[in-house]
Amino acid sequence: MDIESLKRWIATNVEDNGVVVIDESMQPWHSANWRAESMTSQHAFVADQLRSRNVRVYIIHSWTKMWCCTGLRIGSIVTPTADHTQQLKKHQVPWSVNCLALPFVSAVVRDDAFLAKTWACTTQWRADQVRDLTQVAKDLAKRIPGFNGDWHFLGQPFLSWVWIDVRDAAVADALVEAARVAGTPVRAGKHGYKRPTHVRIKVGLPEKFAVLREAWRNLKL
View 1 (cartoon, rainbow, N blue to C red):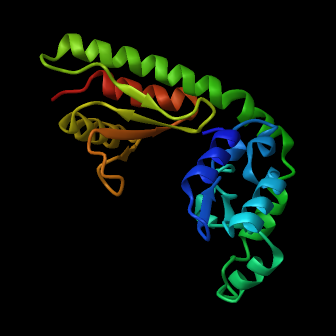
View 2 (view 1 turned 30 degrees about the horizontal axis):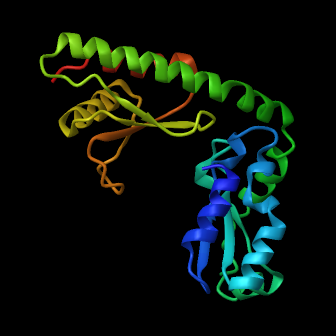
């Protein structure tokens, strides 16, 4: 959902005196201009929602996904006003950020080369993966009787993951197991998401993806 669509959704669907929490943890993958598509750039809109309807908009970010260090666990939240920030801080424990995460993030945000490569490669790698898996699904449909090769690929082109609806829960389970055996684990949609026909893969180095692609190409049911 682009920023203008999101603003319209909030204005139309959120009741007066409501609270909106927007998770923008994947937003930095958008491009070098990701802030323009972030709710953090929409100061007037957020202020107007608070003033006219008492709708409070909070924006959260995880700052470790982008740099492949999710174990460090550091994020941030932007609140409607300084008073709202102080209200949250009353509930914040003193050790909520570990001593490794702060200096790490302070350093990596200056790594312009890494960010430039991420923005340059992710969209292309993702498109290549979708193309290859579309063909894998068609090949499996030819080889396996009754196999539904009409896989549905979900997510914006810039994202670092792809959700795939493979149309069959048993096939999804088989794909997850094949990926595990190949050493390239994927996320099963049935756990937590209640999407038993879905699996999620990451967008990554082509040579790493090739291992997963071939494991799925040789799938046995």
